[in-house]
Amino acid sequence: MTDIIIIGAGAAGMTAALYSLRAGKSVTIIEAESIGGQIANSPRVENFPGFSSISGLELADKMFEQVNALGAALEIDRVVGVEKHSEKHFTVKTEYGAYECGSVIIAGGVKHRRLNVPGEDKFLGKGVYYCAVCDGAFYKDKEVILVGDANSALQYALLLSNYCSKVSMVTMFDKLFGDNCLQQAVRSRENVEIISGFVASSVMGDGAFEGVEFVRTGGTEKMTLKAEALFVAIGQIPDNKAFTPLVTLDKSGFIECTDDCRTSASGVFAAGDCRVKSVRQLTTAVADGAVAALAAAAYLDGE
Ligand SMILES: Cc1cc2nc3c(=O)[nH]c(=O)nc-3n(C[C@H](O)[C@H](O)[C@H](O)COP(=O)(O)OP(=O)(O)OC[C@H]3O[C@@H](n4cnc5c(N)ncnc54)[C@H](O)[C@@H]3O)c2cc1C
Image 1 (spheres, rainbow, N blue to C red):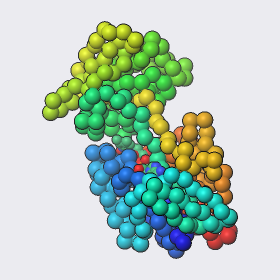
Image 2 (cartoon, helix red, strand yellow; image 1 turned 120 degrees about the vertical axis):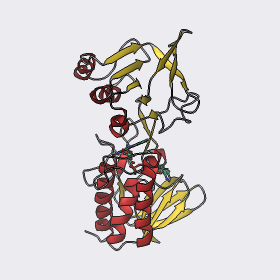
Image 3 (tube, rainbow, N blue to C red; image 1 turned 180 degrees about the vertical axis):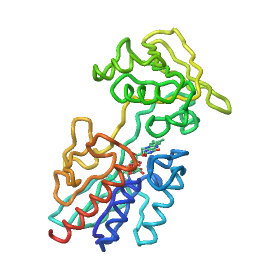
């Protein structure tokens, strides 16, 4: 029986493994896809302390090397459920097996909602981005397209307009959603053009990203915008259904927990982007990983 099972080998999960191992606990990380989670898709990370510039993949590799050297076990498998038998006794069920443990840390992250149009995958990280905080600064003095119409898109518009020469913000309907003060702030930026009533139909480019083709919402009129990059802010999707009803989710599907990452089920902790929080970044994910691991170790030690 493992002391702590960590679900997800992203930044939060690997930091949770680091702190759990250093607290003397045995650890198994179960990862459904590949090491690193979302950050492995980022060609350049420039806001993680200690590295002025590093590729997301290299950073993820370094995190994994560190926990691997300390003795973390890794299983590539998808967790499909967690069952609590009693305090300090859980079964984590996966597609291919089941694992017994004393405590569980859920660090399953989120996925950015995609446009699901041709060309989007091809230019992922090379012209198509889902995180303006992470990648906006790479487009200083360049023209960019932003797709989205609610709070995160409005925040992206403000952020991008600080760096970029022009932000073409394309919205699906004829209005913006989100906070009034954000809407007003965006409308007051001279370098933000709001183009209403279009949906993206394809991302253009042969070798390199060239722009986006749109079609009128509910119509046939076409529009082409050329730019250096596309930022997509149409929401993030958590995938926490496998952990219900054991843990409580908010109405958007994020795991509710306390400041020390305790969920509604004792012995189950949540770390990183999968939980209710206001800032979803590497630094906040690793912070959660540390907090959740120390809380899990204390739970196992009966503190
Ligand atoms: C393209 C891109 C660029 C970014 N750039 C930056 C940046 O420059 N700076 C920054 O601070 N932040 C950046 N971010 C945000 C940052 O990557 C995230 O905030 C952070 O990685 C979240 O880490 P996490 O461990 O919580 O989740 P994730 O990184 O999402 O990791 C979760 C892991 O859990 C696995 N998983 C999910 N469900 C299951 C399951 N049921 N069973 C097993 N495994 C499961 C997933 O496969 C995934 O590997 C970027 C994000 C993206 C997408």
